[in-house]
Image 1 (cartoon, rainbow, N blue to C red):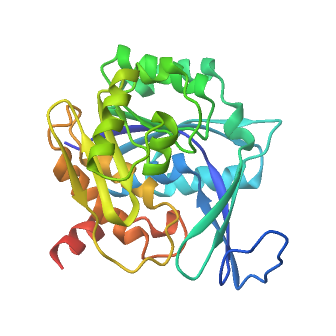
Image 2 (cartoon, one colour):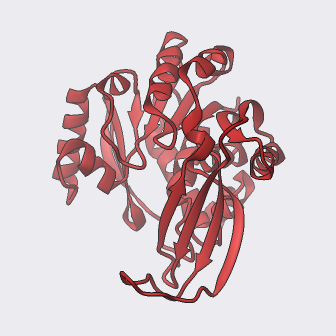
Image 3 (cartoon, one colour):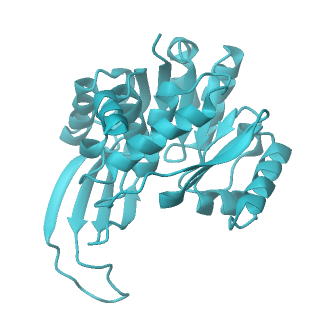
Length: 306
């Protein structure tokens, strides 16, 4: 039976500017290409989960504008239930501006817009949608008080909660106490724990620090190297697949969404789910754009057989 995944998160229209290299302070560069696509960490994660086979729902907010209607339509095209997306009448839809260089590396500027207008009461109103899920995922592109309200409801209904603390920010300690699995990258993990990630020993130390803060299970994504995991039952490192990266935008989001489509709520198959997520992410970085490059289940399975 397919996993039921609900994502609380951001909806942004991404504008990508392709450049030869990142500009220096005060420098002006010409862009080689400009393109726009649906995005936002929340939307990307939901699409990755849906394309990988999960029954997916979305909780979020858009502006009363063409960008908002475009975002809802984009999620609908992937079969995602958007009935819990609210339209804000005063603030526009979120947006992201991505600088992408020839090496596939990016720098991103985000305008939160309506993503920052979600209120805890609006999440409480869709409790039934949260209760249906096996997993509830959220990030830090929506307010933390909303995350706390949603995760508190999730725990009341036995739903496994996944926190992607990105972009890194000081976390309300109460959120960590209702988080089952936290998934930062190595930089975010170091910011949150104060322990730099350099090797397995330092990752183990990060896991212990997160446990002290209330989270028993940790995955640290380490870019092209792979992903470290530490749960109550096991720990280890799953290497990434070696590919030529064209655009790393949404690689981490694909990883989390794909992971949620395969992971068992008790995390008992975490290594197999991580391998699947790594494969999905490796396909994403070989394409241009965030959402357009997220693979389907069939594409991941085909890559595994190649």
